[in-house]
Image 1: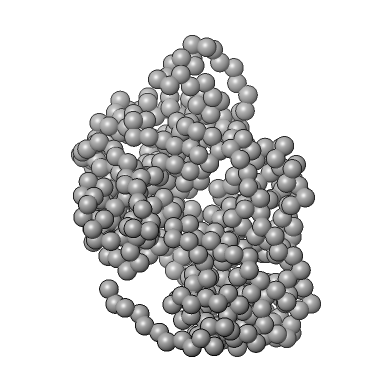
Image 2: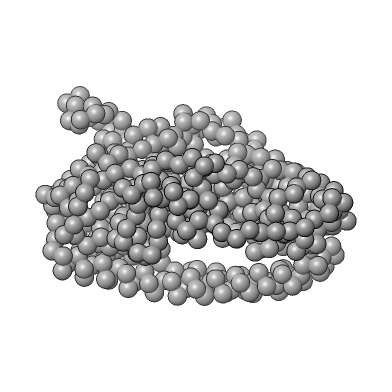
Length: 473
């Protein structure tokens, strides 16, 4: 591990309003030429406030409500992504009504993906959006700063490096609102110049939207292939998911090992999925395990993380996009890796998140044998024998299987869990390896074509980033 060395005068340290003297912060400050004379965002802000926390009892778990609570994961590529919303009940929604998100307000993450931002542009009268306490919203004086340009600026590569240097915390990164107020403003001060920059970006955004309209989500492709091959009735399934009232008997509540009686566990859509899958196979996941499904290893952040280590720590956050994202994963000391030989990943392992709303049930398949890593205690490792792991991975991603996770998970609010003892008893298709290979190859080919669009979109975003870079003083 190389040693980074930098020299800094005490007088230059005093130029920073926070008197920060850590290496990364000093480096980016030097690169951006940040001095006390640089304008700060606080000169343009008319409102800056953080969101509000919710409790377990505030979640609405029986489908959709008119109230959505936005969390950090709902910010994706500079836009609001409501593909995985958190619904809250009417009482909490009414309590938060005065804090609802309004058109034109800018939202910025102050925890986890610190600095990720979007401007709220779409208003649905029947849906109220409020913010988690891990987010903040701000309004600016539109006569002095173009809010659209500001969001581009906040999401630019340079400013994201600034946020990485300014955030604090070892595991859960956080950003003080003071760093938002004191954010250096390096874009042109003249509002007309700002509008010229936005107008230059506008046609590129149109091209990006056209490309996005051509993308089919991977899960849509996966569902279509499985539905075709196994004759699943997705329409009937979706109709049953909208049924929120049901009758049952006491004997039905006794028909499970935990004596569970929740609507979630006994609802008609869950019963339908379970019936269909069990009618098509006599096999359970445990029948194809090469070893018992195990939970991962916990970590002591102050002792085990190593910034420049060669081995990774696979957390739930690192598989949130259905693949292991090594570029985002933290690294650990060699001694931690060596001390946990039974908690390592290997080629074709499937890692599943076992906890947390929005993450529980998500899976990643390890497709690179060069990645050395220990998987976290809030994930599970699934190793199969006599079964195509890629086919299993796609099966685990289907809406049918994910609904089994939904019905079987335990807990309230964001503190839900599913355990190996439950997972191993879930049904899995009983077809030949040849058929598994064929289905997996069809899905892999179809989803692979979508990556072409992803690449083109990234090229367009890089072009926008260059425009912002050129505009910076």
